[in-house]
Structures are given as structure tokens and as C-alpha cells.
Image (cartoon, one colour):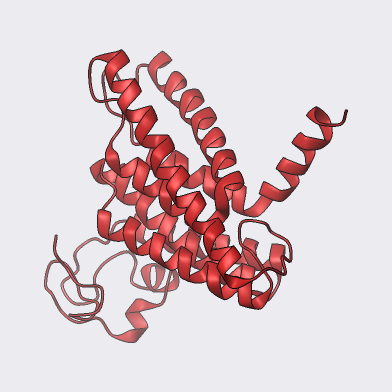
Length: 246
């Protein structure tokens, strides 16, 4: 739509009246206004408080999990990007390049900052490493992410004879790799494929979608990244303890 996030200020999409600060309180303002604009009365979709409430819930979960730390701050930023991209992909079947690129850049910046602070979003545990080592881990994750999904996209398109996956998924994967590193990226991809296959199969079986209907994969990647960011260390630890014991 070409709209700026900074200017103009928050306004009603119908009457374009600038919103008062009291009309911009997440979740509460929607219920206070009974789901309607306080100036023209147009209905405000319930998705607004739903997304705001989901964001607050995720931020609280991350704070309880990691406490007041660089890991929490990094995950707040990462989850903000993931949630926005997942919703956009659900609506439009696109993953905007400016968002994935800016998210990737922010992930690399945070790798440097986390290296200085002795913490890591992807590792979920203190890692006392040189900032350049942390940065290289993010670059490796980003490169693997875009190469891996681009390869899957090309091979899938050749085997199916049609476009199997959008290029935006590879960009999102690169962004996730920049934040979490290559190990957590692979875990996130595995989780995404599992949920995608399960939910897609159920949707096909119940005829909610038809066989050749495109399904947005970005939300599944975002879900996989969220699980990997919160419980990735425990999941990988359990995997290696079971299958690499001997």
C-alpha cells in the first residue's frame, strides 16, 4: 500500500481522523470503543485486538522464560517481525522483501550486540564469544537459510511442474537464520514442515482447500522459528541425548 509506519500518525482508515492516544491503547481501546471508530463509527475488525493481545502474550512468555536480558529483548524484536510477516503472508500470500531484509539486518546487528553482552538468542544460554564470531554465526545461518529453501523451491518446482514455493520463504528463512544460527534454523524448518504437512493434509481431507490451492508457508516458518527460539536448546539437547548417546 505504500504507507509509512511513521507518518501520518495513526488514523481511521475510513474518515482519516487522527486517533487520540486514548484510542491507541492496545486491546483495551477496542473494547472501550465497542469495536468502532470513535469519530465515524466504522467497524474495527476484531483482528486488531487479537494481534495486539497475541503480541502481549508472546512478550510475557519470553519475559518469563528468559527474564530481563538481552535474549528477551532480541526475541521481542524477532517475534515482532515474525508475527507481522506471518499475518501478511496469510492475507496476501507474499512476504514483503523490505520486512525480511530489515529483519535480517537487525538480526546480524543483534548478533554483534549479543556477542558483546555474552548472550545469544539462538543458543538460549550464555555464550561468551567474540562479537565477530557471533556475527559469523548469524551470517552462516542466513546463507544456509536462503540456499536451503531456494534449493527446495527449485527442486520442488521441477518435480511438480509448477511453482512449489515463493521466493519470500527463502528470504524469511535467511532472516530466521541470521537471528537463531544454523542449528536452530534447521530445527525451525523441520517444525515448519511438520506443521505444514499436518495442517495442509487436514485441510485437504476436510476439503477446506483444493489440491492446487496455494498455501502460505510463512506462518509455519514463523511458528517453527518461535518454537526454536523458546525451546530450541531443550529440543536439540533431548535429540542429541537420545540419538547420539553412543
